[in-house]
Image 1 (cartoon, one colour):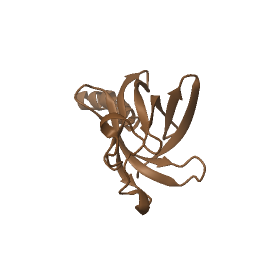
Image 2 (cartoon, helix red, strand yellow; image 1 turned 30 degrees about the vertical axis):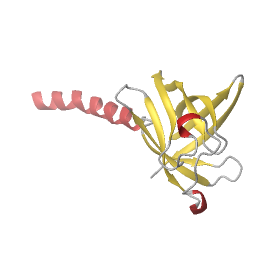
Image 3 (spheres, one colour; image 1 turned 120 degrees about the vertical axis):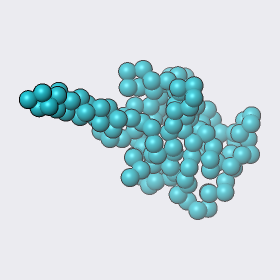
Length: 142
């Protein structure tokens, strides 16, 4: 009888834990071109030792761009390979939304304020410049 009660208590708790883990933004995501709808790259989102979220490019779909460098970037990223480049930096979680950091568009070398959140098994990625923003939808890499 004791085992049945313990099992009936732990089962919903285990379900909750697995649901919470499936709702994470960590892992590999496919970026999608806004105009063509085709996959452009893969970005690996991870939590660093400082507890903040970072993202680096781990795959580029177009073979002609796989060796490309960030010629438009400023600072230490100028001229560096885009493959392996950290493009999302310093996001912190606040009620299932990650913000307070930046995102780099390596094609044009611009850095924007960034906000991420999950919606319908997709990742919404918003870059801000002043009052203007653009939101992309990234897909899980399965």
